[in-house]
Length: 321
Image (cartoon, rainbow, N blue to C red; front, side, top):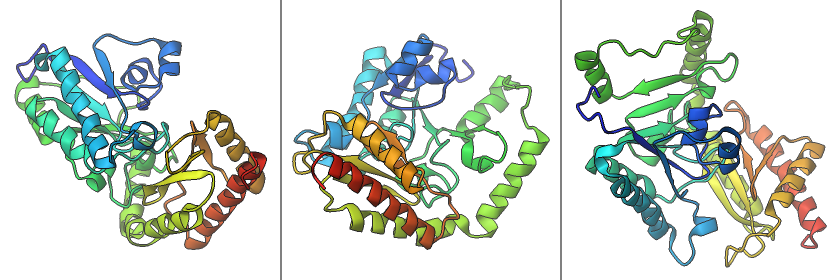
């Protein structure tokens, strides 16, 4: 409305994306079981996730990344560019399985958003504040969003706090033409949460925590994960960067054939992990991890070793150990 395009109301999200659990956030996300619980809202559409291992077929990762990105253009044209306000997505999918898109994906998404004057909205609730070794995950992937959804790492979870960061383009439109941004909440700018966030951000900066994730512990975790699981009979792919990673279960790595009961195997692995003393999460056929940003190399060694034991136990249970 403020920008002079009042028809631009539709939003596009991604299937298997996760943007929150309230009704509007659930609708923007693409988890169908959550849609069934809470319903959808009007003017929300979805495109496929860039999950090459599962859906890449005969395409190379680069080809598949571009193909997935072009779905956004197709959806914009289907809805009418004059009707589409924004595209929202996580730079890498968190709750959906720590799925990292091919390198070709985000540059093409940004090009499409700019071409059709569609806002590029990055959900950085999981990826923000050092997780990838950059302050924000969009910096790792090399694109410039118009909005940033932030939380979690903002206070390192010590107290609840979230926020929305707007680009200069949006901010100037609101200031110069829009008047008051009427989006106040009961606990907006809460002084306790703000004090915790400031202290947390200073620690991340002044103690060199983000830099250490980028230069030391992040590369170390990625290296040892690939060394341990590169030839494992149950693992088809290792994805991740910084202190976030995923192990993809596969029945046949060469053909990217997934186990029909991959959910059960992953849940079994998660349970074995708990028994071994490591908290690791299962999502579909993937084991996902996001250790503390202050984790030492020794603690990362323990994480990977106990995860290996859990995966080996699953392998033995299906006769492949």
